Image (cartoon, rainbow over all chains, first blue to last red; front, side, top):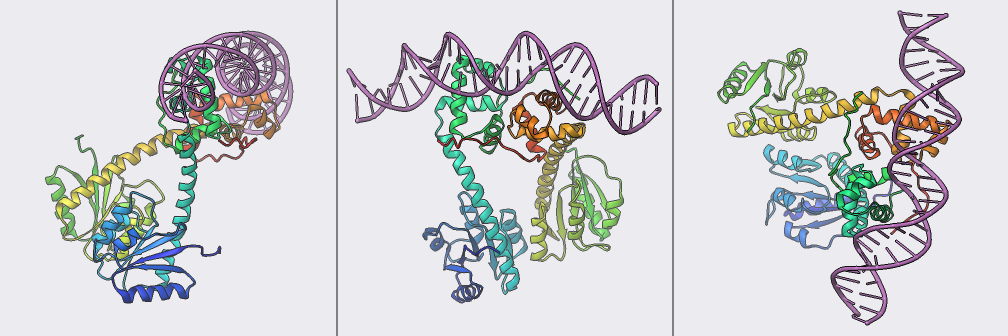
Length: 215
Length: 215
DNA sequence: GGACGATGCATGGATTTCCATAAGTTGCGG
DNA sequence: CCGCAACTTATGGAAATCCATGCATCGTCC
């Protein structure tokens, strides 16, 4: 097992719960940081590392489920709900929105630790994904407007000739744009570029359909 | 709104519930078919159309959640759980495993109808996806063993020369295989073939990395 | 044995892509 | 005004791909 290089955020309005959870995790060598309210959690400076959020549903300022919805937009650690007065609709909503688990107090320690493990693993995976995608987006950002027009045509499978006609420029010019795109996107081949474009959700605007070559 | 061309399967051991649900759906012009047990549902001949499965957790033969696990392997309609004695862990497990909703009796009619709507929409989408993927798999199945070796090399971005060397055959022969693959897979371009290979989860075994052409 | 499909190789030409070199316009900011 | 970035075009040769035609071997099935 790799070193547990991660942190667990705990948001609960009950000081005793915060203390108990903190000690429990500390006893297992897990770094933790507690917050008494949603607002406190949101405004706090959080370290940039794999994490997991243990969230109570009943909070003094806003509902835990609503907090889940609010932070759903940006990057946020996977959530494990831990509540004393949970009901089925809440749990359903929580899981539907991506929560790792929905536990009720008092909860099984093993179940909690397992949920934390899953959440952290998911976060690590997610962070890797976001990092990779971030690199691609950065490269895409470095393209000139014209190059951003060329890219979808190329990955659609158009010939240089056809793509050039589409843009109303000469084939030679398009070839240069295409070359620049390949370089800037660090694609080793057209196949690579197609996959990169797929990850960036670049739509296939034109396709080179001709004869219906069925089997 | 398109015509409601779908059917709702109801699995519940309580005859009164079956009857009530059947009438409720009939009153809304929704086709339904009832089953008294999981086994009855599994063995029954079910029409091939968009559907949705309303499932009770407590069944005479096996647990509803276990049934969900069993049919998870193959194609099955999205599940809406409807139970009288639900608990949070059950609901969490159900949703985690892909159930559309987890409702408790007596349940809100609107909620049930909404869940059915979501489930049917999801099934329609899923059927489309499976149909497309099925066509691709069929085409892939039509490839010869050698062609199935050539495909991953080609979509990895290797030059014909390199791919040929990889297989220990001449470049000419590889070109022929490549051509056949394109035809059989009905790919209009290499870009197309790369996307198709992606849908078929064909791994990129070799890549043509050379100079680290960073920005 | 013969038909058939899979695999293999070759030649040759048309098309396309890849690459470098050279050079022109436009528009913006220092 | 000068530099710079973006966009544009041209020429020319090397490399790769696309395509057709022809042919050989091997194993299987009828």
